[in-house]
Image 1 (cartoon, one colour):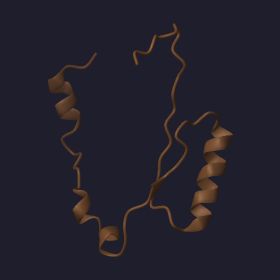
Image 2 (cartoon, rainbow, N blue to C red):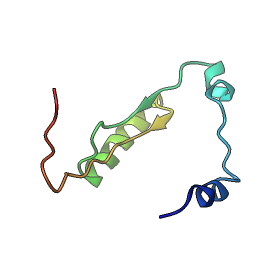
Image 3 (cartoon, helix red, strand yellow):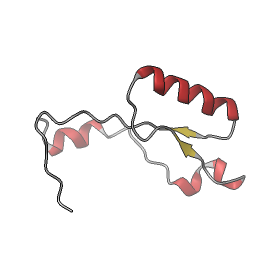
Image 4 (cartoon, rainbow, N blue to C red):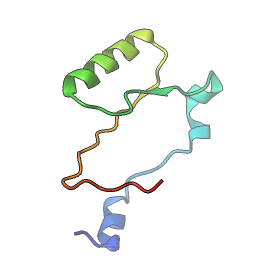
Length: 76
């Protein structure tokens, strides 16, 4: 496992640009879209292609959740 110092060194050239500086905000709201749960590569690619065809989505995102090896009880 990397130390905090090693992680900092790897991020030296990584700059986070504040959203208010993104040019797209000068024209309209930023649209982020994609499946809440990416189940298959086919699903992700089909969704991405359909969203791209709309020309309305600026950022595509998908979350991949792995099943827990042991059921985890959820507290209500």
